[in-house]
Image 1 (cartoon, helix red, strand yellow):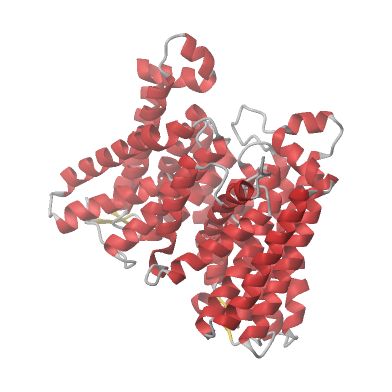
Image 2 (cartoon, helix red, strand yellow):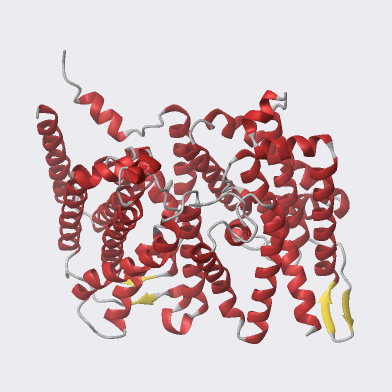
Length: 284
Length: 308
């Protein structure tokens, strides 16, 4: 019982970290970012290169990896997305191209076999019927801290207010002197950084492979649809919902059926409440 | 009228070229590449019919292809039916899948359809691996009966299927039906205001697209004499989208040309086969920045422009 509670929380934290960035960039810049999974994968691979090949200490490697992916996200917005902003279809396709290039690039550089990234915490916690690795608990804690920081950042800082303003009314915000383009870059970098952090933290207990970007991204889609596109509280709620229902299904029925949970959740949401749990914008 | 004549002449020329190719270069390897290219062309045309005309991008077309291929494989290997049954059955099952995903998502505006298709195809691929007792897991279902004994006959059958599919889809795209679909791409709200049942047309277009893709998937299974979970792969869906972009979206015949070109290109430049997706993504970025209308369709229009 306690296992379900804690493992579900860990899964939810990972999902929430991925979904929040995805929904943020959609809500603010209206970019449906198909390369979000690539940011996650790039974080894990960057950590692998720095710890496994360059033998840097892990904390330094993690910070550099997250910073690198954030810069990559911001640069991608500036160089690839911005010139194509007039056509939403082209933006969608360019993010897809970046995801493809990530996958193929990692495949060419490192091959298809799984890579190892060392864990921050190697002890496992086996107490009161609970059996879980320290790294998973660390991921849970880091996820909660990141989400809290993100909330404070958006609600309390000047930059956060600018981001909120842009997401509510891009034109009006621009008339007030908020530089929309610069905000888009910042948000892209921010969402890339959160995804990369999730990649670095989960790399020790999930596999690091060229195709690792796909499944987390599909889960992020599912969560964002269930929670409501563009709503951060909604995606956190949906991450909890999906994380726990997958854990319950995997303990109660069989791990094989967990994959279907998110698909059914997506279809049910779209039939019953297309705007998502906390979505404001009518989707019809 | 002159415009149409030139198009017909061009289409016949390409068809003759494709029909002659295996007779000129006699190798099983080459005719295999040709067959796969032609099947890709069927898939690309079916993608374009739904997504190119209505502007609703489908990121999981492999869902329909895989549904068709696995249906054909099940009928042939588990029920011992003739491989011919796979073609209509594959199309039917693909249509059923298109209803499951299309009905909840296509009545909505926004990116829901694209996301749901991508999620559905990915999850189906995972399921074929998880339920390996029935689907053969990673190895898939090998040892299917071929449609024809000779490779050449299979190739010509696929070519005939491509002609049939593209004529059908082109006919529909140029009828008043196609006009409505294009109007939906232009302004969905205006169409609705004009009393057009937008959702009905979108779902019907998706069903037709799925039927063609499903039959194409069954064809692919019969040609390979096996199916693997790769028929559900996202990389397949994406390859098709890039082929359509290269061909020119919304023209049906452009994507057919784009698919054949792109499918042959890496095989002919030997050694590039491994870097196929790499080449494709570079091509995609080039097209997005420098030639948003694609390559094949604008090139053909430029070649056949009325001489002044």
